[in-house]
Image (cartoon, rainbow, N blue to C red; front, side):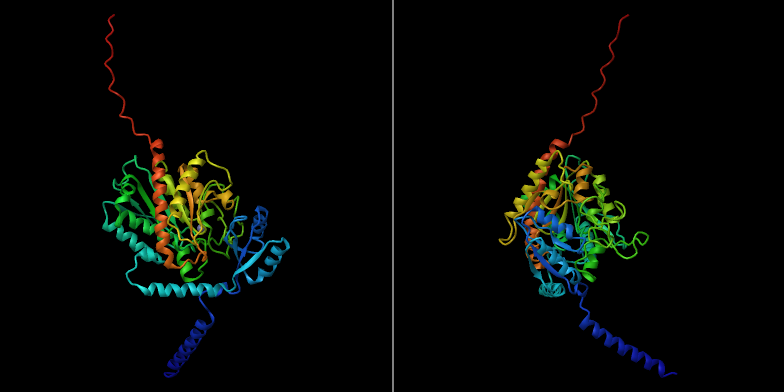
Amino acid sequence: MQCIVPWMFTMELKYLVIFAVIDVVFAGKHDIYQGFSVHDVQLRNTADQKILFGMEYQFELDLWEHGMPGQREARVMVSEENRAAFLDALDAEGIEHYVHLTNVPEALEKFDEEQRIWSAGRNNRMIFENFQRYSEINSYIERIAERYPNLVSVVTAGKSFENRDIKYLKISTTNFNDPSKPIYFMNAMIHAREWVTTPVTLYSIYRLVENLRHEDADLRDDVDWIIMPLVNPDGYEYTHTNERLWRKTRSYYPEVNATCYGVDGNRNFDILFNTLGVSANPCAFTYPGHVAFSEPETQYIRDILHEYKDRIQIYMDIHSHGNYVLFGYGDASLTPNAAQLHQVGAAMGAAIDAKKLAKARYYLVGNSASVLYATSGSAQDYGQFVGVPFSYTLELPGYEYSFQVPARYQDQINEETWHGIAASARLAKLYYASRYVPPSPGPSPAAPAPTIAL
Ligand SMILES: [Zn+2]
């Protein structure tokens, strides 16, 4: 007996090693996308766009880009099972399409390889020059708050569904006590696969705290900032470990659905909830959740918006990709200040365009339903709804890479976007002057009652 146990152990180990090798050879990290392909679809008019959107759920499409009739092609990922029927359906409508990627796992592997080279290339990169993991990002946030206690405070909003801390920074030269200053609230990574977004928030922190430049002194002195770099850490980590193209949260409510995980955080807010641009299928990318604010991650944004709604002058929910500055409402109805919303958004887009790469698109600015597509339950709309005068969705560039923009572009995206953030902050601040009512000096002392002679 004595020698059998070690022998069995050795055998088991041998098999384990063999299986592990097989695993490495045959089970690539991105095999879940085996057979998927990506296609560009030419939209001649809004009718074409409607037809394409109508196919989204029928063929389980992942719309990487929604396109703009006559101007921008749509980009769509489709599975092997659905591909032939989908392309036939496009052909039947006379809609032209081209192959963008025939092999999605290979493209993702190429991205990983470039990432490995980039990460190994220099060891003194700043945190916003690469796609750092959750723990690194949180450590940076903590470190900044420790180093600059008179300027920065860190707040833990609460836990994610999988029990990760969700933190944000408050940056203020007056400890958030001066109501004459507007607040600029920005967050990133509601959608997990949009990796270029979080570095932009980290770079903004850097520019406001560690590397304030003379020309930006007004931004730190005259504006208070709330910055939440990682709204959906569960989804973000999952894109690093399991599915690079995961979009949703990672919540699991077996009493609602025992098969699929996650909710589209940007459809989960209590505004027009579950009406437009959503799927009732819990497995779909645009599943809004079984109730509004089912997700702790969206609750934290809601709570910040409510807590500071009298002072938040601008709310920027940062996504990628497509180069858009969008505002509400998602059902195409406009707010009374739509002209101002457009003006501030246009100032932002133009400031970014002035610094953009030659190959990058110009920013498009407008109502999200008119420019892009109808939505419900978005963060942008909820911000507007609770009274933030300038509430936006910002879609950063994807260039030709969509969600897999290589990290070597991150400096460029950070820098150009910062210019847009600065422009929007300054203009929105001007409007705050008409919104903020200084407290009156108080009632003047009562005049002595006249003496009445009887
Ligand atoms: Zn997004």
